[in-house]
Amino acid sequence: MTRKSAFAAVEVSVDPATAFRAFTEEIDRWWVPGPINNWDTSGSLGKRIEPGVGGRIVEVYQDDALELGRITVWEPGSRLVYRSSVDESEVDIQFEATGSGTRVSVEHYLLPGADETRAALFWPNVIRWLVPWCENHDPSRPPHRLARVSVGLHYEDPPAAARWLARAFGFGSWDGIPTEGEQRSWVELHMGDVAIILSPLDGKRAPEPVSHTVWVYVDDLDAHHAHAVAAGAIIVEGIRQHGYRAYVAEDIGGHRWTFVQASPSMRAGA
Image 1: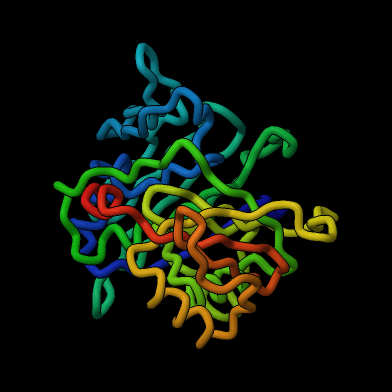
Image 2: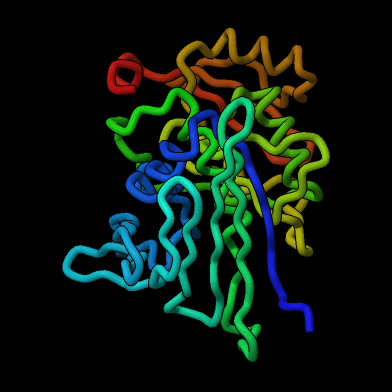
């Protein structure tokens, strides 16, 4: 009987030994700390992998840690396998040299007789986060930290919406903007340390008229406005002074964004 599994592969711009070290020793640096990317986001301080067979994969808390898995295969620069401690699944990560770096592949699969309702085969969505971390690889870089506020928006096609938002409004992503044709169950964009979570509609369509807006502070409001206009954004309200200086634009999903000129103190602390 074929086991239920999920598979993905990415290419990173470092050699296999470095890719393996980055994956294991620096997981707390490349792991994207999104609102839903931990077992207990409210308490998590990060991730840690203990080296060697029998080593633990743990989520670290202030006075405790949750064991996520135990390592069963440890081959530096080549392969890492661990068995989950929180559900009935196993994860197999392999590192293979290519002409320009390393192909990192991951298979996340259920164990025989596993209860499918208790397992989430999430690793194919996670492995892509390693790619931007390995670009200009620098282990001394501090980990990403999220702001206290994140935004959740629903779109017919989250990857297409992400590409449009990146092109029109200049949003980035710690784990990369989806390419044309790439499918994801959700997409996380980032503006500084704020996460913008794009999810499928699932019947969650904004009421008419639009009842909300999202505020984003930018360094050069005039340049941002010109770029958005050139990209085809609908300008609902042009640049105006209200004590603050801002404009309002509408995106392809009907969501409205208020872009505000950042204060000098904001720019100095960026």
